[in-house]
Length: 271
Length: 361
Ligand SMILES: Nc1ncnc2c1ncn2[C@@H]1O[C@H](COP(=O)(O)OP(=O)(O)O)[C@@H](O)[C@H]1O
Ligand SMILES: [Mg+2]
Image 1 (cartoon, rainbow over the protein chains, first blue to last red):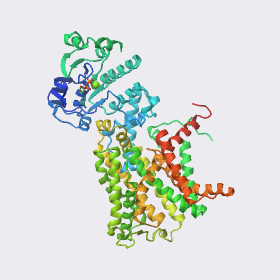
Image 2: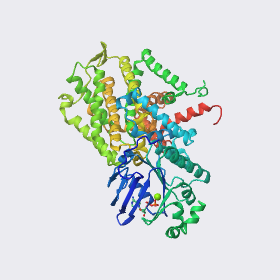
Image 3: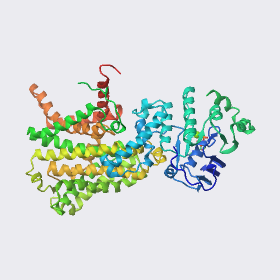
Image 4: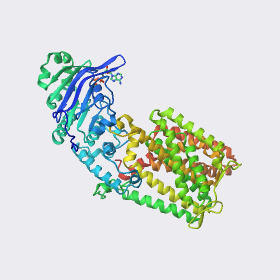
């Protein structure tokens, strides 16, 4: 699914490098001096208790927040400030902790919006819905139908997403992000509030996206079981600082992580 | 009558992407269009002049406002003024280029409204909702002030009014005192059908999706690469274009002349009510809203006296006018609270019921 492979300039292995990033809101330090990298093709989990700064980290990566210090290098290009639309154009897509779909639009239209950056037919043809405009619409519709088949949501194609149950909304949101054919996919708690079966489905989709399309994924997740199963490497944040970084096995044994998760571990297991 | 999709399988995405995928819907639309044209043959001038022509023109203005408010989520109270820009621009075009075909003048006048709309749409990047409505209100008053205070706009006419000159299409008068209601109706009908088709093409494609995305969640829209300012300004431009053309039609093919106060704030609210009652974000709803708001008072004016007079109860025109305000007010409250998608939604629910009838699901 990755249409574009940018010429590799700096490090062959890492797609994204976060270096000494700090972020504060007035007095609150959401992130302090965090560094880690994401390698091409891996699933990188970001975990930590509530308020640890995980969502803020994703917001920095896709240009929604601007770090007060430090830098982020994506695809060999280092940026201090980046506009969200530039991040989207560069190949970063994401889903949100609280679903951010277009509620009044159908599943199909929501996923079609993910193709916005790839649709270029002129305004004149849009007025007529003929020629290049119709051709483009059909071509992108085909891609979107493939995504709909992949996510097994054919039956809700025409339904306004505001009417869908939460679990399906999360799936549609994943579809919209996939429609962008991103190089890096940021998933913010994609399984929050789901039952076991829905979680299994979502895990399968995430693995499939990663394995079949080679999409690099950054995943925030509370369920430790899911994290252990899915991720190649894990970053652990606590109070805005990185406290551990490594394979799931390494992280699980880390004393600071165990300490941070002492109370939370049970919560994560049963959730 | 069988309203079913059974047996109609789509074999290509192009077929499934059609704006009216159901054969019954397409037939229904064709029948309505044929009937609309046939209406010109009935020779009922009152029906054409007093009901159909204004209904179509207001529908066009309602579509214009609906593109902005219903589809893009930007509330505007300047519709009347944008219609005025179209009317005055058309008047200037007809006097500056007397040889230019009047239909082209009307279509071109929309571009002036679009340009003005874009200027007053600029604040929409920073402000939303109530505050944007106030900004458009400023546009309404400023433009209305221009209509009164800039004598150049009315060719230094002392009365301050603009008047439709005599203009022909294929040798037949379509504008001016000698144009018959039939020919004017046919011109208006054709232009409204054409522009509605264009609006429908826009809202069902990339542009319409970008508008609705901005309406539903502008942050997410930006994060998938939709440029907010560009999308909003395009909505202002297209919306004002439709309103501008509607304003030009209003003066040139209906009233025959107008003064500045035709395009006052009441006109803006009038169109807004049509959009709310008809259904935010629906083109069919724009027609329904225009029909209800514009035709209901006419029907009331005829039905209420006819019902009450036999009982010796006289009703004055003023009473009917009050009745009209009360009904419109009640409907607006009803739709805002109970069904924000308006008549169009009720229509859809009805169709859905018909589709599965006689089964409940
Ligand atoms: N827009 C914001 N304004 C003020 N404070 C914020 C904002 N976003 C996040 N924060 C603060 O930053 C900290 C980290 O939040 P967040 O990144 O949402 O944590 P997590 O996703 O790990 O639960 C919290 O203390 C939160 O209150
Ligand atoms: Mg979070």
